[in-house]
Image 1 (cartoon, one colour):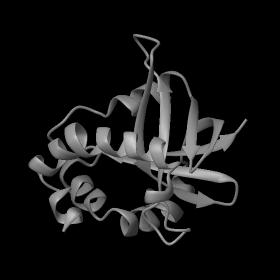
Image 2 (cartoon, helix red, strand yellow):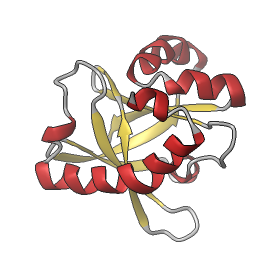
Image 3 (cartoon, helix red, strand yellow):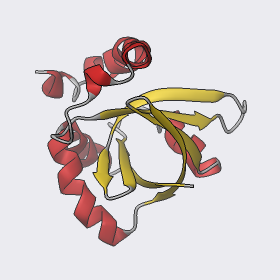
Image 4 (cartoon, helix red, strand yellow):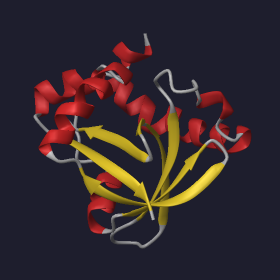
Length: 149
């Protein structure tokens, strides 16, 4: 049900203004235990980027994939919003802090190559099917590959 709701304007608004702030608080309070499936999909991390204009840290929960030591995250514009601030922040300053469970580490981000996109996109669609419907409408997606360092 949440997958279908997340593909609507109302769902996007609720995720942005209600679920994400609550999820961020609950994640920190539980060390991420509530949002971990042990690699069976829909795992969530906390992504902290530095605001490109303000310089302030901004933290948002994001679904992710693991590819060995790499972490893969995605944003797809639903076609009725501006690009997510974390995307433009990572493009401006490609250093991010990730909290996965209780582990917090610094990562370097880069956009996925075309070859990587072919590998990661089907896996990302399994995690959040709304990515597919959003991409069909907007043709705007960003996939970042993050490596420790």
